[in-house]
Image (tube, rainbow, N blue to C red; front, top):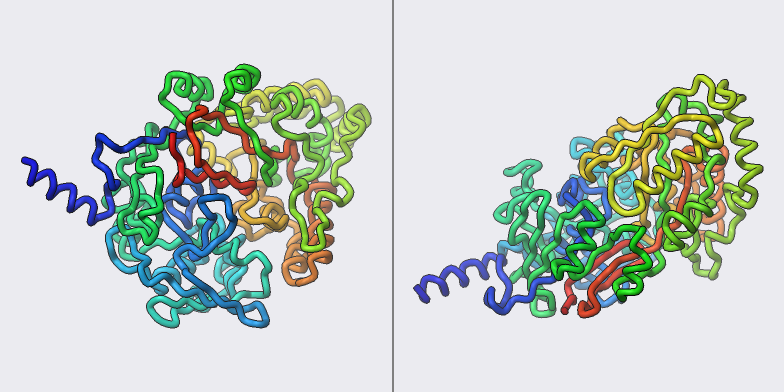
Length: 533
């Protein structure tokens, strides 16, 4: 029996499916960063929870350092940049492998990048991220063939990427999960289910899937074929898929969770007193997603009225109890150019200094749109998922719109993966939304409202806006870049009121005092490779 057990463990280790210690010695880190994810497919994911799972199972040419050191080489051991900033040559590590032991090659990355921009993939980031590579945007819109993408394998371990134009943050782009490699034979043999089973989820990251129980947990253990396998500290990470914030806190108090990024807002004082609460700044904005194509919100007067009729200061102070900051723009501070200027230094897009005056203006605009005092305005639905501050925020917003505009807003609560699909498909009228920056430039947030963005679930379209975003991307002068982006923000969010900024995010979490080594970034990364307790 002992020989049989040894053989089973040896085979599993060779396949990258178990940790380096026996089951009795493995310490499990139990965490919760969300409920059931929509997908673990790097090219098809657009959610922050899915992104963090993917960062443990896959790795890009570049990656976020596990110790908070920022962007560092990942699957590529080195790279060169041409003098004109247009050509990046990455050298893949000789010992970089897939979790089943097969070599990771330049062709794998070429396949992945073409898969991203291929319209048949329907990748949410096809335009947003694909546009950085030569012809990527045209391919994503069907204007050019996939093989025109500016990527090629020089040899088995060298990939050359030609950019559409110089980009100061392209290495950050290469660290984003949309560009993490997937293997063609695995994807094509298993369809959309390839990421749901340990035997088919073949990745190249520090972890492999031990088990995946839908709506319950995703369990990961170290990938024995990872080039830095000996540096992985956490030998077993169990991601609990819990929806209810009260259940999350109860699980932590019962010793069933070590780290969680959500808690009941009404329990803030209690978790602070218990020493469980932690917070850090984050580059991101919480906003009301308005479906710009649905009446009566196809009228910018109506959108502006709804925008001015809320009080983000009250919402931030009372609903989030000060853990988030009130938003006056879509892009907050923290995006800093080389000269030290902060994007948040521009004049605010929405003046929130006089709430009473804003309400009066909102009432005037709604009357001008044909709905004086809300008369004749249809009852509309506000969709939200059920965790965190989302439902209390929705209730407060509905109250403000009723009190100030005389309109009725009903709240529809949905499970996370159902909610994401409904919002992306445009089934909503109003919906809670949020975006945490994928990289340290404000264009990442403002790209959301371009006509070609697969993440544009407001369905706002304005050719002048697209032109400003494209002009901002084309300049290498960061001062001009920021100024053009601010003009675009003023047009879409200010003049056209395509959405309603509510809060500037902070990273908040609760954890037991014993847990150490969890790494977080302002761009939303939550990395557990070094976690211990």
